[in-house]
Structure formats: structure tokens, C-alpha cells
Image 1 (cartoon, one colour):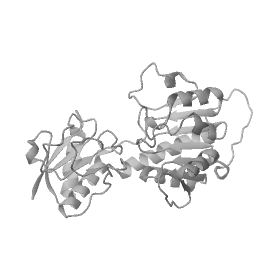
Image 2 (cartoon, helix red, strand yellow; image 1 turned 180 degrees about the vertical axis):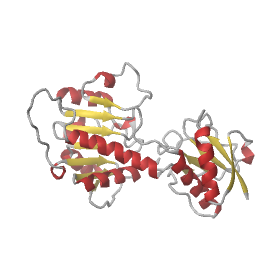
Image 3 (cartoon, one colour; image 1 turned 90 degrees about the vertical axis):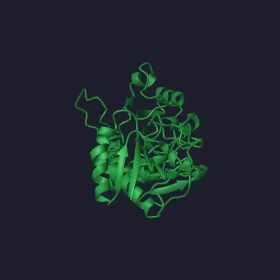
Image 4 (cartoon, one colour; image 1 turned 120 degrees about the horizontal axis):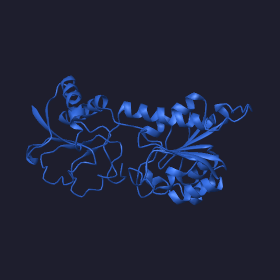
Amino acid sequence: MSLTALFAAGDGVFAEYDAPLRAAFARAGLDVTVVTQAAPDTVDYIIYTPSSPLQDFAPFTRCKAVLSLWAGVERIVGNPTLTQPLARMVDPSLTQGMIEYVTGHVLRYHLALDRPATEWVPVVPPLAQDRKVGFLGLGALGRACAVAQAAIGFDVAGWSRTPREVAGVQCHSGADGLAAVLERSDILVTLLPDTPATTNILNATTLAQMPRGAYVINPGRGTLIDDAALLSALDQGQIAAATLDVFRTEPLPADHAYWHHPRVTVTPHIAAATRAETASDVIAANIARVQAGQGLLHEVSRAAGY
């Protein structure tokens, strides 16, 4: 059966995905034609990014699923015209990229690599087993990164909205669990989704619960942090330094205080990029599943928002 997939992912992206998608569909035994324009009633699937100009899904009455190329879906999940099933991207390369980003910055803070060397004064860092690393968020990315830090030898704990079990990681949930993770975290990594329940989860109160001189790494969502509270905590020494990859406004405005703060490292939303080659296999696998009458991989819960 011949299928039509509308590629609606913004300007300039299709050239990157054209050949990988065709190769992935061939490997999956699928006859799929990918187009960038089509009459809505001819479209079987939509391959999507939330930055796409396509925002009205109502005309796509034949569409079986919307398949996002992004891990984050907060910009689409509340769209009232979206009645089709929605899948977010969980891609092995995206996960590996996040593991490498988080590990690099955890080790940077653990080893005090930012300390200027102006004289010969050996400062020996503790071993990983004596450093407590915390994670807010134990979804696919959070679990993978937490397990990677535990494998190095760090004392790792994580918090999630609902109870989880992760090998090698002390898992907590609920309000008491959040406090328990914050209070022990020498280095804290935030990898929660953007939902009303997570907005400003790092604020003046929660930052004050962390050990004085702790570090914050946020490759999750810009809305997780109350910016004014973090800047104040940095100025007061409650937080020693922060590495931030995501922001409420992107690109981060040139006059934003984060650019100029001596203890803030800004990275331009690079922690976990979707790679066309591996993401195309995920797209093909999901179309194959739907065609076989199976459920989507990584289907988004509208109620939970992720």
C-alpha cells in the first residue's frame, strides 16, 4: 500500500532528511512518498517539528499520526486542532548526545576545571563516589544520563513526578522526595518536561534547599528555572555556577544577564540534537507499527503533556 507523509518541519530541513527517510522506509519495507506540500485529505502521516508553520491539523482527516522530530512537545500538545495521535522523538543518537553533554559538564564541575591556575597549588578533587549528583526528571533522557553518571561512580539520586526504579540510582518522588534530592545534590541536572507542574521548579525556595556552593546544569527546558532566583543565588554564593542550554526565549537575547554573569556558561541549545539518520529509523518504525495495527512508540499523553 502506497502512503503519503507530509514533511512539515520548517524551511531547509527536508534536504537533510530526504535521503535518510527514503533509506529507512526501504529497510522497513514501506512504500512511503514524502512530500513538503499536499492536499490535506491525501496525507497519511505528518512528520513534524513544533516550529513548523503548520498549526491547524483539522483538515488532515485521513492522517493516522503526527510524528515529531523533537523530544519536546510542549509547543504542540495543547493545540486544540490536533486530534491525531502524537509521538515524540526518542532517538538513540539524541540520547547519546545528551549523555555526553551531561557527563562532560558534571565532570567539569566535579574536577573544578574552571578554577584558574595562577600558581602551583595542587587541589585534588574527591573521587566520584564522594560526589552526590542529582537528577530532576527520570524519563528516557534522565534515566540514561543518571545511569551513565552512576557507572562512572558518582552517588546518584533522582526525582520524578511518579515513582520510578532505576538500577544504580536512588529514586524519589513526591514533595518529600524532591526535597531529599535537592538537599543532597552537589551537582543537579534538570531534565524534566515543560508542564504547569514543572514551571519554575528551581526557584528561590528550592535553590535554597541545595547545599551551599552546589552546581546546576539545565539541558531540559528553560521554564524549569526562575531566572531571577538563579541569578540571585549565584550572586549570593548559594549556587557556585550554572551551565544552561535552554531558555525561555531562544535565541537568548544579547542583553540577557546570563551572557554576562561570570559563573554562568551558556550553550545554544545543543545538548541533544536529532540526527536525521537515526531519527528516520524511528519514524519508519512508528509508521510500520501503525500500519500493522500496533500502538505508537513514545506516544504523548495529552493529560500529562508529554
